[in-house]
Each structure stands twice: as structure tokens, then as C-alpha cells.
Length: 180
Image (cartoon, rainbow, N blue to C red):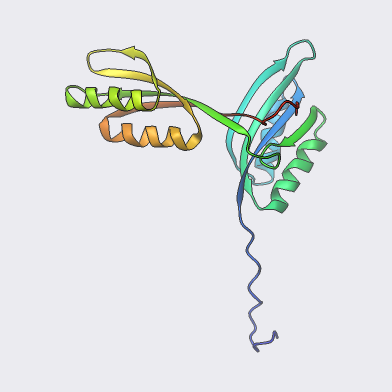
């Protein structure tokens, strides 16, 4: 028994769960994304955002930006397991490097007439959104910003007449002159 003469174990220390942005350089070949996402799902980790694109054509390398959350121990384990995968060249935790630049692109379709139409144009202008398509009863806006800014824009457009959303996921890069 513990100090209070109870059969229940002492309450464990609760570690905070933090959001981390990982940049992963991998070979650009079939199956790499499946192996990485399989590693996450096989161990019960969640991917909050995932973006992939070839970044070095001559060397056939792609950059995968993954946003995930977990305790410090879980994040360390994720990075170590990613580093062990054969097609992975480098894993960098942009969150630990300081305040990384993070942006997301979102297409938002809004329907409305009259006052709602005017209000959606005013809000879009306030957020720096670009109008990609306009009809007599709808707009498609392109907005770029942080996840929080995109969420705020979507929240406001929901009240006006949100119809559809398409988000790219987060693209991130560390500040300064050094490459990752």
C-alpha cells in the first residue's frame, strides 16, 4: 500500500500534449507515403496535417510535412521511428527549431444573396482572400494563412452560408538562412 493506506496507485504525472510540425525528406518513390502513414496508424498516432511534394527533382527527393501531437516522449518516439524507415533521409522537428513559418491554403465556397453576399465579400477582403469564382448566388474564395486564421475565416463564413471547404494542409519552413 502507498502512504495513504489505499489500494489505488498514486496518481501519475500528467505530461502535456504538444503539437509538433515535422519536416521529413524522403526518396520520391512509390509506397513511401504509405509506409510513413502506416507507421503512424500502426502505432496509434494521429496525423493532424500532411502535405507532400517533390522538392528536388534531380535527386528524386520529396518533402513531407507532418503535423502531429503528443507528449515529448511520444514525439521523440515518432521521430526515431521515422528516422529508421529506409526511404527517409532526414527528420527535422520544426517546432524545436523555434517559431517556424506555417501556412495553409483553403478554398471556401459560400452561397448567399443580398446582404449575405455583401457580407461575405467584406469578410473575404478583411482576411485577404482572393475571389476565384463568382456567380449570382455563390463565391469561391482562396485564403492563405495560419491554421488559426483559416479556422476563423471558416467560422465566420459558416454563419453566412458556407457550402464547401477544401484545405491543403500545412506547409512549414524554419526561419533563417540555414537549410533543414
